[in-house]
Length: 272
Image (cartoon, rainbow, N blue to C red; front, side):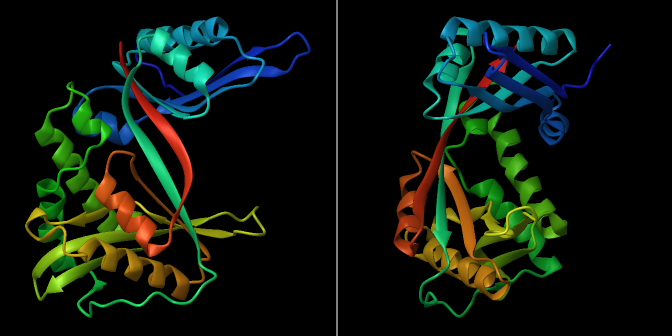
């Protein structure tokens, strides 16, 4: 019988301290889209007292239980600095798919100036066009790196993600272009953190896409600036954005806008 992935696993040291910790959950959206049962290691952590052999045994225990529960694939995302857990995953036959670079911008400086006057909030009639841009725009993500997923399915994954952002997953989707001839878009989402008195609201930019026919003209930079302005007007003082470490065009765009490197995480897939 298929079982849910929502569980907690750990190894303790001689003093009762947690040395390795792994939590799991269903990757429901991905499972439904790719028609494969997929789980995610939501927390995958090892302390300085951790030994690679012990971490490997914990990882293998987790993946064995997930296999028995009917899962076909497991995702794991680990901080780049946690080399013990990374080596444990590699020994357990997890394969590296990408390295996600997260950048941060604190909105405490002068307002960014936007050259383009054609950036606006989307309207429902824009959705088919921006979904097509998502399909037409290649990104060096883990879904394209994993040969178990077809490129067609990976492109459709981003198109559906875009549609969901327009349906309320994001607070807004900003588009640029002339009339209905949209050339790019960017999503803006506010994450509420009520327990954080210093940053109760954090902005997240999940998707930035520019049609391949007009890339290299600064459109992505203008969209990113517009998103930053949107957050500023909505009371957000910290904005996060992420991209693959080998997406140099995106990284240079975000750095030029003023973002600074915040964290790096590795993404692994394990097919069971």
